[in-house]
Length: 401
Image (cartoon, rainbow, N blue to C red; front, side, top):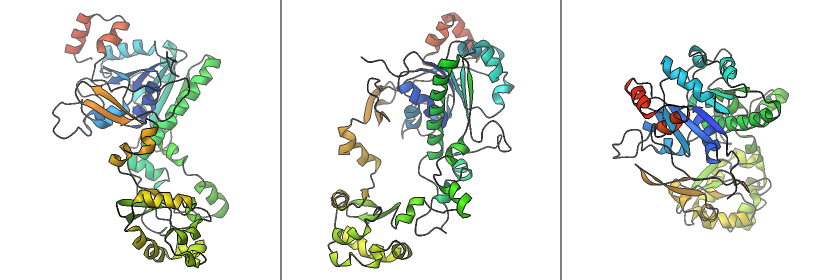
């Protein structure tokens, strides 16, 4: 079997929540040995974020935790304790990467500055993930996915293309945190490549606000040249509707005519005589009259299924697409053909199906795997740095692990 991309890479994961764990999950799923450091008894807060209904087992039945921590090893360690800190420094000596998401300044308060860590491990890569970065007037602000999405500028653009004065809305899910996790992963891999040549450690300062701002496409540069701030996606200028869904017989269809494709709506709905009508042929007329376009399309859609409409629209260069529910996504023929979803056994949750490889690397297989139980690998990891079974029992009694 081919080796995985990160086989042999050892990572100390001191993150909680979504952004940091997603970064380290990507490393683990492609072969890195990721040691997740969790608080004794409680663990990562996502362990209790969304336990499945009826589950009584504490810490071990969260779908969020499961997805974000596949293929990792879990140890428990109290970093507020002097002996716990000594153990942590022993662990840090033997890894290539440390990823942490403590509040800015908290690592320094514990005596774990980049400088002190690099004294014991000169080639250590330290990826620090926080809401606003390690410096600046906001660095100690409390934040959530919502607040970062707002301060990063992305929420401002989340409005219908035809109603730019509407209130900004938030993207579904935790898009600010996932984009931060992905960019943290990219930065970490970049540092690994650099360190192979320089033989020196690298400190990485990740700001979630800046990660979100980096996704704004042309909004900022447009303001520099035009003196205006677009309130919607730049692609909305290609003509309504965009980022807009309408009901059909069995769900929803997302409508995007595409550049120059809107007149073909006339053929889609069986009214070719409307091809040259300004409502379809002229972007500005269409943008100014969304209700008229609704009245033209929605009656035709009511008796048709979303896949039927999608296939007909694609043949006419109309980028219409079905809006799939999570249930429908699992049964989607494209997803099935590529074997995207993975299924594994978990000692508490049983069989779990979850989203699989985000990319397919030829010659470097992705691996399915489960999330660890809290402290499941204490004996293994601490044994590697010399602790005997009796010593571990003592550390557990003292609340250190």
